[in-house]
Every structure is written in structure tokens, then in C-alpha cells.
Image 1 (cartoon, rainbow, N blue to C red):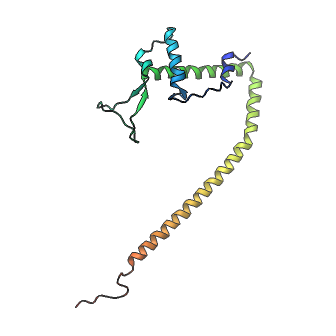
Image 2 (cartoon, one colour; image 1 turned 135 degrees about the horizontal axis):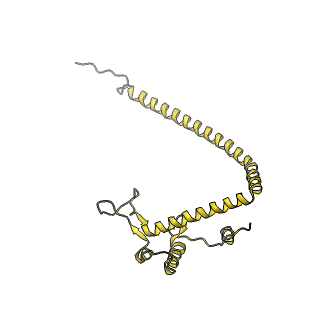
Image 3 (spheres, rainbow, N blue to C red; image 1 turned 180 degrees about the vertical axis):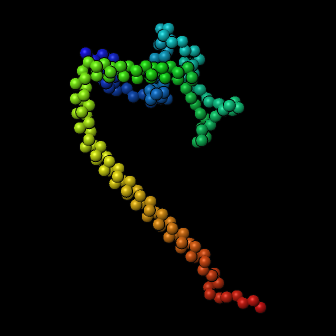
Length: 176
């Protein structure tokens, strides 16, 4: 079996790094809109022109008022039609990757098994080191938390002891 060219092309860096709004971690303006406009042009999709023309929409609450995030910014979302088509592409993309992996396992089970074993052995030292470092970091954090809790308790005890002391500097008021 020869690797299909579309799979090979997925593994070649192209140097372009989009910086706009992302949908499924892919730039909306430079990737999704041109792609979906092209599919509409060719008759493969039938996305409403307003969804392509205004893909980002202001969100509203059920009462019709503008929706704001906890940070106070208005909530902006991708139009439902664009989001649905992106979801469809994503699902088909995942299915294509799974089909390819299954085809390789079916046609070359020994090679696939050898690759899995080699990867497992190669990854073992990394997993051991990560586990050791995580255990050490968690222990250090626990010790810091305990020390902080003890310091807070001592400060609290000192504050209570200070408020229990008489404020008259040892003089006792005697009723007349």
C-alpha cells in the first residue's frame, strides 16, 4: 500500500501561521471562509450568503438582551451554519484518519505492531522521568501548603492573644 498524497500533504509544514479567529483551531478568515465559499461556488454546500458574509455573530440571552461574558465582554460566536459545516468537515477528517490507520493495520499488521512496541519502549524513560518529577513537585507543593497553613495558624493565634490582653496597661478600674 502506498500512502495517499492527501495524507502525505498533511505531514508537510507549509510555513503559514494564521492569526485570526479560529474554529476547530483553524483560522476562520483565511481557511474556513475561502474553503466554504469555494464549496458553495461548486455547489457542494448550500450555506446562506449571510452566514459567509457575517460569520461572527453577537450572542443574545433568552430575553433578547446582548449576552456578556463574566469578564464583561460581549459574547461573539460563529454562525450556526458555519459551525455545522466545520463540524461535518472535522468528523469526516477524523473518519479519514481512522480509515487510513485501519488500512495500514490491515495491510501491514506486523509493521504496525513493531512500530507500537518501538514507540512504547522509546517513551518509557520519558514517562518514568515525568512521573518522578510530578511526584517530587506534588510533595514540594504539599510541604509549602502545610508550611503556609502553619504560618497562618500561628499568625491567627498571635492575633487572638493580642486581643485577649488588657488594654489598660495593668491598671484596673475600681468602681467608686
